Image 1 (tube, rainbow, N blue to C red):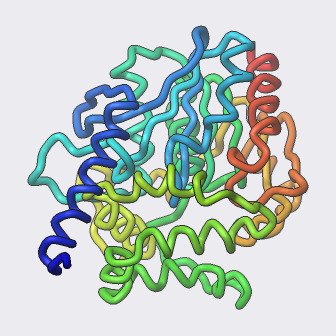
Image 2: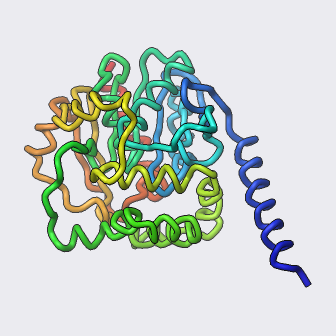
Length: 320
């Protein structure tokens, strides 16, 4: 019979083995702050595709092949706190405010010597893509943004939302408590699976699909990065001093001027309703199209990859 100590040692070994396997399957590039793991396919003009929470780079597995076939290079990094991506300095606080995630995109592009590139993303990755496009239009040629404009005002308190919206944000309030931190640490896979199920209620994913991605949540920085992200955005955790001016700039909701297509999942219980077209165009003066995708929820690259890949091909053709 196994003792508790033997069981915990075996479990810990399994986690480490899973992380090592993921690290071996991904390429690695070093930036000033991170060792970023990433998946790559194709050759040609680069497209940086950015996953959300709780997900990983495998969200783009079925988006990449049509793009590679069309002559593009698809680069899917694992965000800080996910999969094989790690901090270079073991002593720095594990922070994940929006400005940091946005800077990670530029640092990733710099490390790969990408002067110009396109972006696509959703959730955390959509926010990072928005920030990169808004602050670096000289670098970002075009964008496909799932759920639209996601840049946050972390400076001024946000007014209360409608009750239905507040209800859907339960996990954010949970993570702003120490009980929530402990709960995420103890139940990360169960919590994240529940979010998949509730945010995309019409997506009947296989356990194999979820488990392949859930290995990325075993990253030792996952809990700290997630907790910091959800606390910083409402003023319950300090940000990095180097991003103070950037957060001030982002709080003014800068326009995204690069050619953009917006996609939204019609069944996304987190993303809310599509705003008026005038609201989207106020944030995106070069908006080419905005589309509601039937039969899809929050995790659109998983659920309807062809909608994402075709939108990227379209926006890149229009931005030549």
